[in-house]
Length: 417
Image (tube, rainbow, N blue to C red):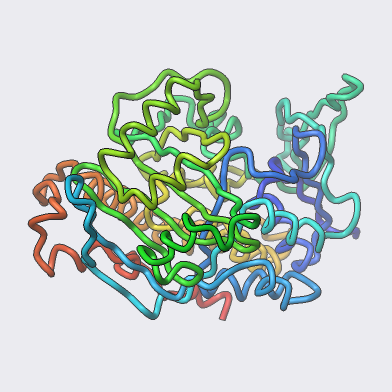
């Protein structure tokens, strides 16, 4: 008998991670992705944080493990601080000096993982159209369209893996009534390349206000809002600013909005009222900031059906406050690969049952905790928690802001030990 075969829909980080995990489990893999070529920039993401176990998993997949260290920066400190909108003075609310994450630029991490795959695993410019199950459920057939030629191609496999993101069309096939939940806020995002301004007065002053840049994940909280700020490799700053607002109207299959010059100008004016002038200067220098509409969804009760399984944001759309989205995707892929290796294709249902039983309880708690953390930092109400006020917060309130309160923060699944 030949190798078992999987089709992975989605060539983002979740899909590429899944390809690595399944190849190591002895499977043949093909990844289909509608974008015409490997990304060189970061159209819908910018910076991300990798937890210690995700770092180990990635290093086990790539031929030169040291490359992960060389393409990321340490985030050893998780610091939450309050900025007074009037005086612009900041004070520390909570600080964890044993955080041990690493900061990566989305495109750098994607390239590192993609370049470590065998050639021709990813079919760029292939649009997923539909799938169907054989009558005896022995195989799944995936219909794709080659966008350059318009030709339709069918691929037969033992397993279909949906790594097609939070707006997953494959998930919608099984859960047509599932709706994403708008968080109540959007996020301005951007990256500033300061490689030509390393010794400028603006950067020197910025590093006086944020003295641990290069090793610290800064959360700035003000009344009813908060921002995130940290350094990336090659003299870049990653910046995010969450703003409470009514749900915008989105067009197309993306949670990223195109923004007008007027909208950017208004954002700049609001930043002057909220943040320290040193940060405002960085915000104004970011070219082409973009706006993400922040969604999650209530945790799913099931993440596989016959020969179709969900991973990453398709399985658990989440808000970004727990730095879990990428880390959950990496862990999903690793666990799925080990389950498939353990049970082999003849016992595929048992493998998917075990994958679901390991991951679903963890991701359920993490999605809900990330939702809670976002509402606290945005000053939004919770049924058991008054609106958080950075000016009046007690030390006990502030401890709840730390990332290490995330459920299963330190846990490693036994199948991966």
